[in-house]
Length: 454
Image (cartoon, rainbow, N blue to C red; front, top):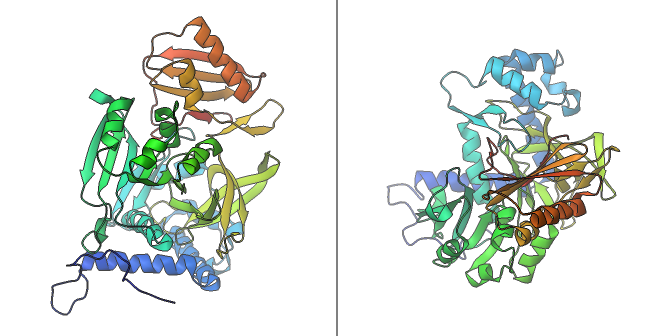
């Protein structure tokens, strides 16, 4: 093992100027936490499993002491003798009940922030997050750059949805570094955050060309919208070194575009409730190494589905740091398969074939389930719109909203119906409405498609 910082972009004044100190407190704590996380996720598996087991016991002990709801679920069995499979699955309805009746389970005076899910799987669910969980998500994000040896000096360009329309359709915020607490220790690239809603593409491209893009963090459907009539060579020409899809899956056609431009894709599988779940393997695309410093993953096959010839089960999450609102065997609403190790040699659990329950699956009247992909390219070839949304509202109906226009011509209506029938199947009734603005409600992710019957 070689621990060597000679290749790291340390600043000339990286080290502490205080007496009897090496590194100042904030970067030292962050670096220490990163090393701990890397040790857990890449080190001895037996030690990792033991750590997870003890963390689970700590969480269950806390929940039993602070919550009547959890005491009933845990029962009279001693905590040390409980296996995860002994506990019932936690549904969204269960979660709503616990939060409504008991609130945060942290001791009085401890910091807990109220959050809510994005609404991508129905009505947003409120829950509480501890300060430690927020700190973990920041450190875990940084840890991935260390584990893969990524270049810290590259810029990061991150896109976020915006609720209200502004001139040009986007706002830009820049900061000197995206390294957070490590910014005083390492030379880091600049951070650019772009909030957008129906952006003017020409103006946005001019903004992107001002600085090397570096790490591009963006929802796949925004990429599809911006590049519906061209390849993504503009991104490589303007310094994009990695595409990090956020909020939804990047389908094969989009991945192929980035591969053709020489830009690697590295997705993160996460949820609003628990943060990091898995990180895409750099050697085995669409396989996700489970973030074992944060979660334990189970697959419930009792209510599974067959997709593309593969049997998928429901993803159950146990968030090891969820002391404010416990998530133990939580049904996040996704389907996947789980392997004990990765083909790359990683000695840890790996998720693959991940499908969001409300995101990319259609349920048919015969009970079968099939993937459903929606590409902005084909919609925009028919109608120049600002936004769009498709919802499966029952077993036979898909509702389409085309935003930013007052009406559709007869030819456009026919072409759109043909497009959706081609994608979904002739058995579906396709209802299409032109609207000036789509009411996204609490759906912060603004998913292009979701099923409301799964």
